Amino acid sequence: MRKHSLRDAGLGALGVVLVFVVLFWRLGDATFWDPDEAHYAETSREMIATGDWWAPYYNEQPFFDKPVLFHQLQASAMRLVDDPELGARAVSALAALGLILVTRWFAATLISRDVANAAALMLGGSPGVFALARYAILDTLFTLFTFGGAACLAVSALRDRARLQWIGYVALALGVLVKGPIALVLAALTFIVLIAASPDLRRRLLALRWVLGTLVIVAIAAPWFVYMYTRFGRAFVDGYFLDENVRLFAASRFGNQPGFWFYFQILATGLLPWTGLLVGRMIDDLRAVWRGERLDHVETMLWAWTMAIVGFFTASTFKLDHYVFPAAPALCVLCARAWTDVRLHHRERSTAASRVGLYFIGPFLVAVGMGCGYFLIARLALPRAAILVAVALTAAGAVLTMLANVRGALPLRVPWVVTSALIVTYAGVVAFVMPALEQRKVVPDMAQWVAARARDGDRIATYRMNRWTPAYRFYVGRHVRMLEDPAEAERFFGKPEPFYCVMRRNAYDEFVAQGARLEVLYEREGMTATTGRALWRSQTPMTRFVVVAKPR
Image 1 (cartoon, rainbow, N blue to C red):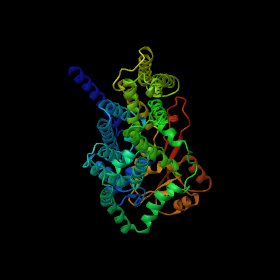
Image 2 (cartoon, rainbow, N blue to C red; image 1 turned 180 degrees about the horizontal axis):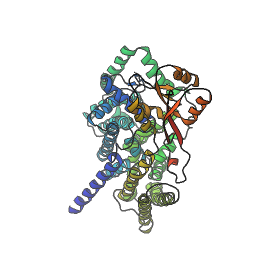
Image 3 (cartoon, rainbow, N blue to C red; image 1 turned 90 degrees about the vertical axis):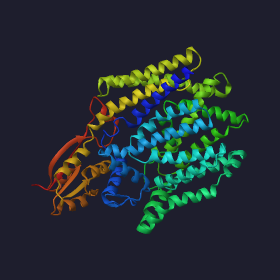
Image 4 (spheres, rainbow, N blue to C red; image 1 turned 60 degrees about the horizontal axis):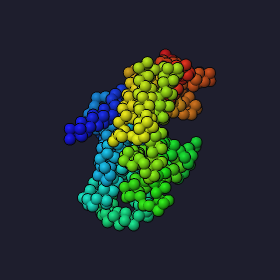
């Protein structure tokens, strides 16, 4: 009994440290990243400034990109916390914590405690959670509600806990208020796959109160959409339903979109270092189906959820990497099942491919650790202490490789060795990489410089700032004219009212060469987009940004 208590205490301490480092440590230190984070934060700040908590605005214009719930929560957090970056990111971080807990509950209820603990550590230590939980956009909150709602419905159906389904319907309704009808689309696609896959699952799922549950979802989510239609009319229909949903999915509005394999590559990267384990589990499951065996209901549900998400967004003409994040909890549970099954049935044919995938983790970590060591020593301009990341990854990989090959099995209930190495890795990113990138993010500083000097009647503008315009808009705290066309910019410069405009130095030189009367008031050198190339010791050329105004 004492041994179990000590093990549980150690596991709890490991989980607390993981959550603290991945989700909360130095959460508000960095200025907003370009472009989405600043865009969402500015919309929430305008909600606070105007007192209009039901209609999102950006740059004082209606913003029909997403529904209102995320902005309401984000704005509430920003009012409670003096630090705007911390307040804006708090919702994403807390939602990620909730998602980890929901994933653990789901796995513990339907599978086992060991699988639940492993799944929670795998999800909490995944690159996807680390990136999105520290980024002030809605994906972790959306995933919490959609996966959480689907998990409640699954447990209700498989464990005959009828009351739990109502929590699931409410969660899906909140998902609609975060990102729109896509929450229902993903749930419906999963439902269709499941009722087609198994007669028993069909019976269990159809026994739920789907009709009344749909009415609950409509009663919670529909009023906001009705309100927006009555307030903005056709503009809301065109801007939200047609532009941000139908045309974004079906029409080729943007060029240079990634191909068919894009989301498979994103998931493979986002699940590292567990990707080989997941591929092994998929092969083992396919072999079982080929032999005529049926997967259990939980396994079927997890794969169906993943298929619905990846299939839907792959079919879309517009793709962003974080769209498939809702698949991450299910995939981490599958990885955790594979880890546990290899430990319990390591000599059985049913786990052969998973065993190969698990054995791959150790050498992979060694290779990554040694690669990091080379770059940290020879190429990257980071503090020497960053070498601890390379040491931790290499050591963890060596331990796993030794356990797998010398003893022939992994007698670990949870992947604490890998988790410990990931904690050191993420701590290194937060302590060393982010501050180095922050030094090269100059647009927020330029915006604050303008905000401190511009008078009430002065015009504020940007010229072809592209990804940096939202960050500039947030930190300048004023309405910004976003200029893209040279003729439009020249007309703006020619008006008698004073102005401040931020642009690249080469654009300023072109305007001056064409006779524009402009004066540089402030100049900084920095990066045009967030990129790891800014960390190279042999410095890649930075871009010069200038604040220009009428000559004095």
